[in-house]
Length: 116
Image (cartoon, rainbow, N blue to C red; front, side, top):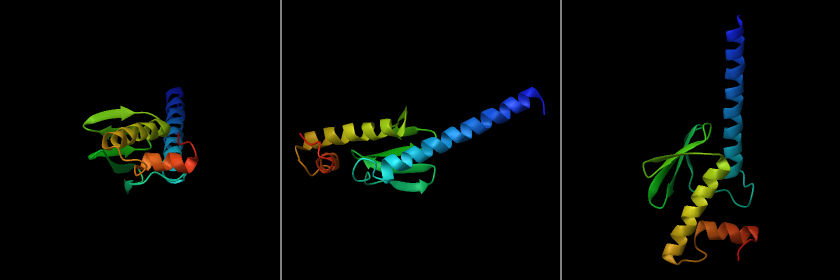
């Protein structure tokens, strides 16, 4: 195979490995309880498309690409960025309802021992 074919095959292998790594990291963040209990509410439609409810709107998440969609807006980041995105909105939702500690974000902090 020519030089371009070799370069293309290397690039293809690199991208496949990166997708696998992102998917595995998302699995750890959302389901394997890396910092306390796993995040509740996820529905796995396929191994590559997950969703959950966030503030009454559907959040679609594609772990292998690191993209998610919420309120008709697209976002991109690491699984940790996605987890922080969700936690911020759950915190805001809890504060708006003035319900403590019934909110999942508050319960997670209490379990981890970081509740102030």
